[in-house]
Image (cartoon, rainbow over all chains, first blue to last red; front, side, top):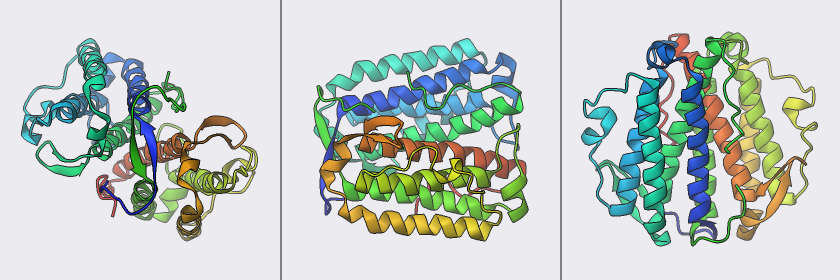
Length: 168
Length: 168
C-alpha cells in the first residue's frame, strides 16, 4: 500500500490492529494443530510445500517483521529464517513452540511502537517499500493465503479444518 | 473487529482502503481467468466447492457489502446471491461479467461514503455486528482465504497461478 494522502481518512487503533493480527494467528495455530504430525511435514497437493513449510515462513515474516516495525532494524530477505538455511521444524511441537514465541514477541513489543510509526514508509527486509501498516497487512494476507491452502490439505486428508470465522 | 477505543490510533485514508480491496480483487480476477472453463465450474479437491462457487460467494458478499456500507440497507444473509438460490454462473464469461459489474459498483459508490462511516458499528447482512472497516476486512480476508484454495486447485491442475504479490 502506498501512503495515499489525497482522500479523507479514518482511524484504526493500534489495539484493534494487534487484535486483528493475533486473531488470525490463533486460527492458523489451530490449523497447525489439526494436522497429523507426519502430514504436517510431508503432505501436499499439486507439488506445493507441506503446511509446516508455509507456517515456518509465516513465523519468519512475523518475527522479523515485528522487529523491523519496532526498531527499524530489518533482517534482510536472506537472513529471514525461511531463507537462511534454517531447517523447517520437523515436529509439530517444535513448530508450535516457535509459533508461541513469536506470539509472545509480538505482544511484548507492540506497546512500545508509537502509533505514528504505522504510517511511516519503510523498506521491509531491505526489499519491500511501503507504509508500515500496509506491510503488516501484507504479512497477514500472506498468512491467510497459505492457511487457506492448508485448509485444502486438511480436507484432502479427510480432516475438518477449524472455523475460519472464529478468531478467539 | 470490535470498536476498540482504549489504545492510540493511526489513520488510513479511504483511498488506500479502496486500493487494498480492488488490488486483491484484481488478483482474484486473474485466478478466475487462469482456470480452464470446465475446471472452473467442476474441479475441486477434498470435496470442496469448485472455484466458481467461491468466486460467486465473493461477488455476493462484495456487492451486498458495498451496498450495506454505503446505504445501511443490508441484504439479509438469505437474500445474498450465493444463498438465495441464484445459480453459480455456468461460464467464465458470465462470472467475469458479474465480477466486473461489482468492481464498477464499488468504484462508483465509494466516493459517496463519508470517512466516519468506516468507524461506525453496524450489523452486516442482519447477522454480523462489527465496525464497518472490520467487516470489510473480513470480506477481503474471506476472499484471500478462498483464493488461496483456488491456487491449490490450479497447482493440482498443473497450472501456474498468478503472482500473489502483484496487485496491479
